[in-house]
Length: 456
Image (cartoon, rainbow, N blue to C red):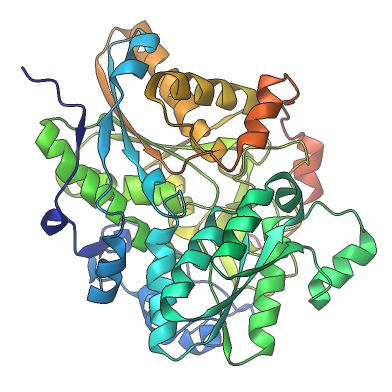
């Protein structure tokens, strides 16, 4: 039998629709609540932030949503992306597993993030928007939106989490090259930023803080709209082109995964690779395990509480039903692996609550050890975020070996690490520290948000 290393679809085989898992969920997500009235919000409440097309996608229950031709044309710069059999990596695992990875690192921005950045920029352009704001943690999302907005002549202001701004300067340079303006968050450009800097001039920042700043800037100017790179329904839906391609590619491999793995921050790349396979579980009674992998230093899925909470630190967003550590939670500065968000997307939170997906947490030295092993066998240096998924692949291989059961595993290689090499340098020098959040730290923010009624 001929050994197939990778499958690349032709442009004509590329999926032309996004998948909306809301159509197939046995329990739909609870409605977001207005931050002031605590009543369910309507489209008018979101209009200051998003174009109407995005709002419609956020609330739709249609199973599939057509991808606009203009978006498809830009997608084809790098899509379809390859599905690769990791033969060399399999050898060092020495276990009865076949390991595949979907290589999203080949996009111009080096990650999966343009899959939603391009349509978000397009829908804003169609409604005449000339300026957008956003936040970014490790810089992958900011880079993707900077890349996307240039196609539509839209100015972009990026608030980058301060600790990442300092640790990952090349992400900043990449955004600048594409024309975006980037500032460390908290900043002095917004009231939220100035308030936090007054309390803590050396604040490392957080995604929650950066979101507050980006939203505040958008709300103050009716000509500016806000864009989010994860968490919300429309963002996760845009990313499902990853899994839709992967299903077609597995058909060409004449294989199908027993385990689907994605690293987890807010949910975008995890949803992208997993939701189409989860559809197979929900509609066809498939038994594929779907595993989200988060850092021990930001463990909202594994140790957070399911309740209504703000998506940002200042409390400007709607209250979302999510697993959360509290919107005031800030990961430790020593955390180098990305995935720093305090909460999980509502859809993913509901799926976890219903036991339709699994969640686990890993420490950062285990992650970087896995990333180095992958780089030395497959060649690609994975983003620190992606190393969480690779660490779980190794765990699954050990489990398969112990059980004596053959398994097919696929993970999303959500980005490359070529602009994150400073973190690898710290690991190779033995300077990375593991950090597990204490119960005291979690309890510190346990009163934030609102309890969800037991009947819900």
